Image (tube, rainbow, N blue to C red; front, side):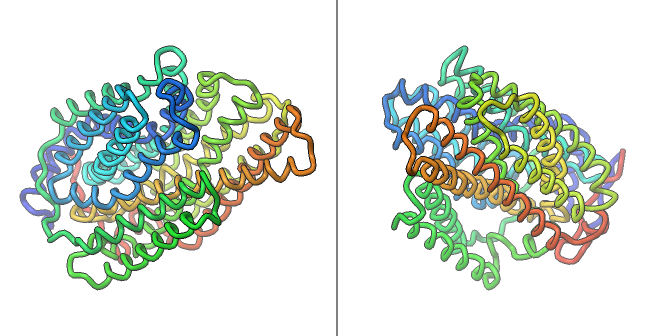
Length: 503
């Protein structure tokens, strides 16, 4: 018979005990839901050229298929976390799964560009409800430290490897079925996860019924929208473009106003205690920098493998599998063995530095290097680095959160990941394009020079990714507190979570 701490409300004990008994089945459900959201960031990218040809839209319009998803997802995450706290995480999860599946079906059946963009935007909106609920449920279901480490290692492995799995699945579906199946496949993920949630998750009561902070909601939604849109606009135009500058400035101003308001309002959308804790704050910063740098891997290494080495989309996806395997293995070691004993202050920065070394080595590749000798070792090192940095950051990013803060805390961690991805896409694309243009100055635009210019753009992105990882490692090392996981869980700024005893 499981017992709960005396501090738990009676209603909370009931659903937490039930979820605890079924915890490993619940992890399967949450893992599927998380995989669906994460791989959608890359699976559609592989299919874009084929979709563009089928629906006859321009190169300028093509970006909106990606941007529509990012804008809705990134700007609505905190609202999604708050809704989950208000209506219960199981309900939020089910609504998110069903809504995401319906939007995917709409996108797969698109007959024109507008229909596809609307579907992708709706996908992003339901993803913003789904993602915080998944992480909040994981946080409140796995409370025994040893089991929590194992669960978060699996979750972190899925989150880190989802992009690579998306590349592989996208390549297979586009090559052997249709670009539409990169969207239809979500129906299978959502159906299995929905059935599992109905079977194994017990209805939970609302964790927080405080009045909704409408001024804060408007400020943070507008701020995140401005930031993500400005970064997307920079990618397709220039950093000096007036609209780019205007939206970025607007986003920063609104987010600064939001941060100030949250310290003054009675019922804040994002309670300052969630981010003031150095362990959680360090995790969010590590997630931000890791997400910026990881786009140098998935985006430009894909370009290099296909454009320079001549890999097919399917072969490119298979080429990333060693990184996935290394990440999954190291995530288990870091979360179950290293993190409980020495805490995140040492292992997260080391992981980011390993990623920095791997990206620096990748920037040395040439036109005629082989995958086995030059790319494969770097992918293994990247996987090990992500296993040491990303997986522990998911665990410590929600460490010590009380149930009523779990939704918004999870949403904040997801926001760090999403904003980091947007920054990485815009920044690295701009730097890469500038490097290619600079290389061609004074040279004839021959096929050989164009190939070399493209390579120069990729290696420039790899080098900047390496620098970003180093910056992330330094900042994480300074922000994280020293101590074991158990000590940090009860540190000031975040009381430890209620713990269920073993049956």
